[in-house]
Picture 1: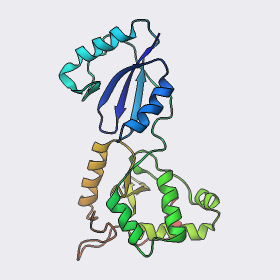
Picture 2 (picture 1 turned 120 degrees about the vertical axis):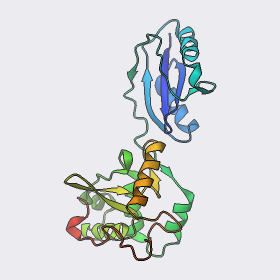
Picture 3 (picture 1 turned 135 degrees about the horizontal axis):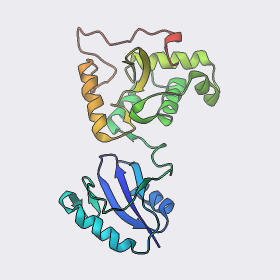
Picture 4 (picture 1 turned 45 degrees about the vertical axis):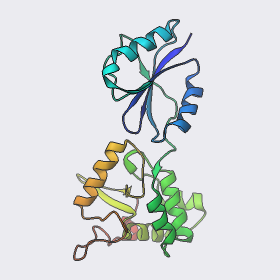
Length: 226
């Protein structure tokens, strides 16, 4: 007996497949899908899984991209699916080679500042939200909290970290130019918003247009997360 699964990748495309070991299959797919796995839906174990898989492929053929991949799944053929609780994408993000080169060649991005930035990227939440507290960063890196605040201040000043406001709440996100955690289409929306906010992408995300003030660059120790 096997299960039917529907995997969604970072572009929102869906793969309809069949497996007898969903954990093992997801592990395999993590390395095979370049834009990451966003969610996995699974059916109950069933004796006629192969036949049902074919029915699902046929029912959604208008949206087939290639093989088992579809742009969307609209007909579930009366199969009950539930979202898997497997830890799927919590520890994976997209990064970009040109942004890595900018960081590597920036004389300020050394030592503790670089370590703080890498730790932030390693603990991003979806849509690039930063939730890890400064005290936790200091504990993990075994440095003083004042040094964490200094590093954060520099990262905000270079627009590597962006201050965002949603209603009355102020928070922080990684600039999507440097990396992204979430759906690719949402990354593009975030970049469009960044341009509206007058933050330049490249050749240097740390620069702003001539005559345009860099948004929220003036920050204070108590104002930086959290």
